Amino acid sequence: MAGENRNDIRPGMLVGIVLKNDQRTGKITEGIVKDILTNSSFHPHGVKVRLANGLVGRVKIIKPAPEK
Image (tube, rainbow, N blue to C red; front, side, top):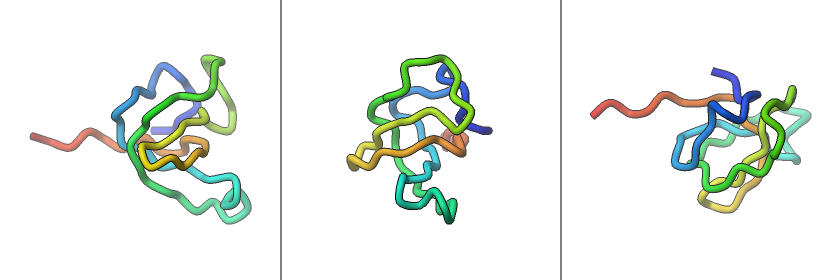
C-alpha cells in the first residue's frame, strides 16, 4: 500500500519511508510512525512522517500489521 493518503496512516504503524538524503536512490527505511507532519489529506510523493527513532521522511510503503 502506498503512503499518499493521510487517512491511511496512523501513529504506531510500521511503514517504509524514504529519507531526504535517500530520495535519489529510493532507499527505504522502516520504522514506527510517531507523528504525521503533512497537514493535507493527500501528497503525491507520500505523506511526511517522523518515526519513533526521530528520522523524518515520506511514506512509500505501509506494512501490514503483524498477526497475533
